[in-house]
Image 1 (cartoon, rainbow, N blue to C red):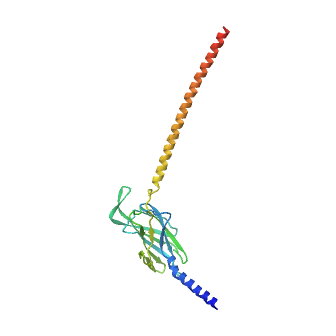
Image 2: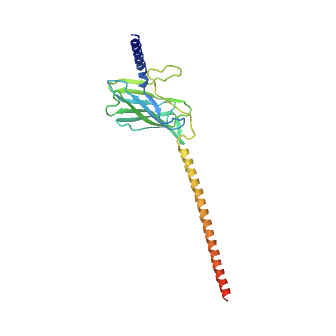
Image 3: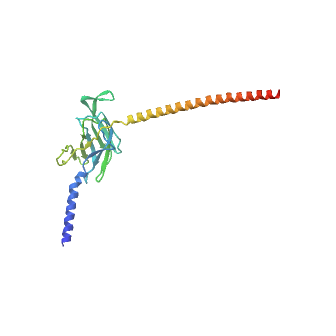
Length: 240
């Protein structure tokens, strides 16, 4: 009897844990593919799950942080979805690759061509972002999720350190420490430079080796010819 009561209590507790933890897995989130270093570029995935049993997600809007505008934002095509990139004028222009940029992407919207994200499924929406700010530890993206029954869920509440997670938290991208190579191009250039130097060194060594071999060959021919001439003269003297 006691065993059955304990088992029943455990089952209820387990169900409660699952119920309470389920929403945490259903939030719209953002994760980098690899590292998202300060001052660098990164590809990030916005993961959008469907929380409803009787409706599909047909539209996803992601608002980029206005306090840290990002000059370069490029979406990757997602089959079954149309994408729209919205740009706005900046109050303070950015400098990128020596050029001033007075506008930046402020919102990216994906709209389903077909069924969208059906119940029990999720979809990833990739974006290429850069350059990431150097004076921030994280970026907050406010997202809006629209369902086929016209319901709208706003994932716009910013999580606060030391407080419980809000009901509809906004996706937060954590930034890692800056590296010396933001684009990966510096390493490539260094490698290319080393390769050229090595090739030049090898070429110089080969040229030197060829020259030495040629000189030795000529000297050998001259010595050989002198030896033959000496032998002929010596033979004539003996004959005389």
